Image (cartoon, rainbow, N blue to C red; front, side, top):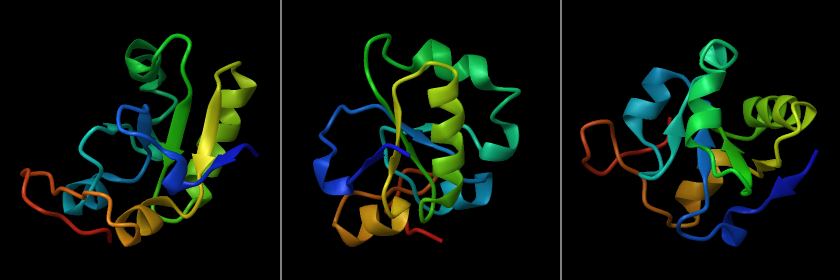
Length: 109
């Protein structure tokens, strides 16, 4: 499974968050697109519309398990996708900004 470290992500890199709604509301990366894994197949078109045509899709969840599954599916569809190692837990621990659903500072649950 192709993987990227949080430290290697740059501002503006496309980020797909596949955590569930309650996790997203508690805290997420501001620039991420949110499509929960449980709704992913039904909402796949949202990703293809939003993702950069020639860019990479960095898939993130809480710790890396769900995002690895989604990244693998995307690779099978011919999309350049990678799993973000350690997920939002590492994102938050690295001091990257996390915001709640209402725009205030958030936390990873």
